[in-house]
Every structure is written in C-alpha cells, then in structure tokens.
Image (tube, rainbow, N blue to C red; front, side, top):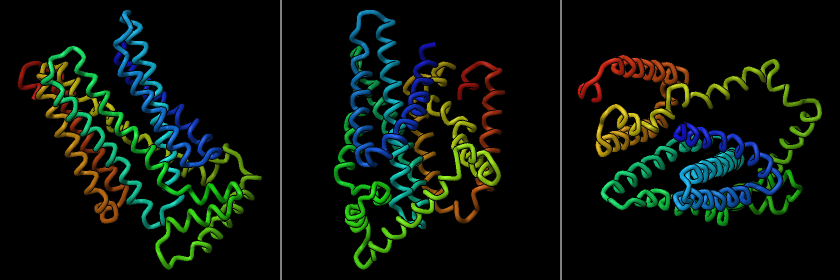
Length: 308
C-alpha cells in the first residue's frame, strides 16, 4: 500500500505542480519559476533524506510520502517552465529536435540514479540509502544556476510590456547579424493576434471543431509513455526482485534497459524524419505489446527460467 502511495504521490504532485507552474511562470517570469522550482526541489529531497528520523514507523512513511508529493510538485513546475521556455526561444527548425532531448535527459537521470543505487549496495550501513537521496542535491542546483545565467523569455517580456528588456534578451539569444528588433516586432504582432482571438475563445473551444482533434492528439502523445508501461519499466528492478532475482542482477538489468532506451532515444532524433511519427508509434507499440504479452504468459509459471 505504501509503495503504491509513494509512486502515486509523485504523479499527483506533478499534475499540481504543472497547474501551479503555468500560472506562476506567467506572473513571475520563466527564470523566476525555474529558480523557484529548483530551490523547492532541494527542500523536497531534504524531506526524503530525513524521513527516517521520526520514531514512529507511520510518521516516517508519512514524511516520506509528503516529500515525494512535494518533489512531484517541483518536477511539475520545472517540466512546465522548461517546455514553455524552449517553445518561446527556439527557432522553429530546432524546436522538434531540442524538445526530443527531454526524454533523453529523463532517461539519463534515471540511469545515473540506478547506478548510484547499484554502487550503494556495497555499503552495509542501515542508512546507506541516504546516499541515493543526497546525490539528487547537485542536480537540484543545476536549474537554479541556469536560471541565473539564461536570459528571460522575450515573449514573456513583450506580454508584460517590457519591450526594451525583451530586445536585450533577444539580442543575447541571437547570433551576430540577426535583426533582433524585427524578431521582437514579430513576437509582438503574434501576441496581439492571440489577444484578439482570446476575446472570442474560451478553454471549452479546445474541445470543439478542429481544436478538439488537436487537443486529443496532444493528450494521446502525453499519455503514450504510460500506455506502453514506462512507469512499470522504471520499477523493473523491484518487480524482478519480487519474482526471485537477486538485487544486484536486477539493478544491472535496469541499468542495461535504461541505457538501451537512452541509445534508442538518440537514434530517434534521426529516424523521426526518415520514417514518420505514426509509423514509429505503431511499430514500437506493437513490439511493446508483444513483449508485455510474453511477460504475462511467463508469469503463469514459476522457476529460475521464468525469471530470466
């Protein structure tokens, strides 16, 4: 029950964080939202780090649950802000390939985490698992440092009427010889058009006409990782230990699986344009379905062979 609560709390927190982050970044700016999410994530890691200090077992579990929920909120804020920032500052030709780096770095983080857990197995101290939590602090600081170095989104500055600051931010983003003023004027024109459309449109329009089709496509694309069982794969080492595999071997398989996924994501940067989105979605989902079916059938039997 507690494992289910801990896993679910992160997802619930991410939904809350995404909603809050969307409103907060429109009011305080992309850089402030990025720095805030980073700072709060360090606090969330600290909550998980000290979760073993209370004497009562339920208090420990409750504190860890609160830490996981709070960490999920921070992740939701960061994901929301990062994707918004990239969509506003990247040229159209680079948006697809660069946004494709999001799952790559997600897998890279999982890979680093699984390696840290694997190396922690040799420590026999009862609190050695704290090393895994402490290793998250340096990564929590990275977005905070980036928020201090990156220019603010010119689009957000134009929306706030800060045209001079928007021009300076755009000049920092552009290379030499680019007419930054023209780009700011183009941003301002597109925002004015959006403001005019907003007077006659509501959120319910997302579910009407051609907008309904676009909304469903975006919802399907967002749900796709869960449809092929990404969350279950992230907990693969736990499930392998449940069916009888040793902790060391299960983590090795987890590391190998994440590594292969990382390589596949890098390859996808090239094959996306060569094979198309629909073809890749259909073929990979069909393959995943066959593999899940094979594991389900294997689960009907027992023995060492079944585990492998």
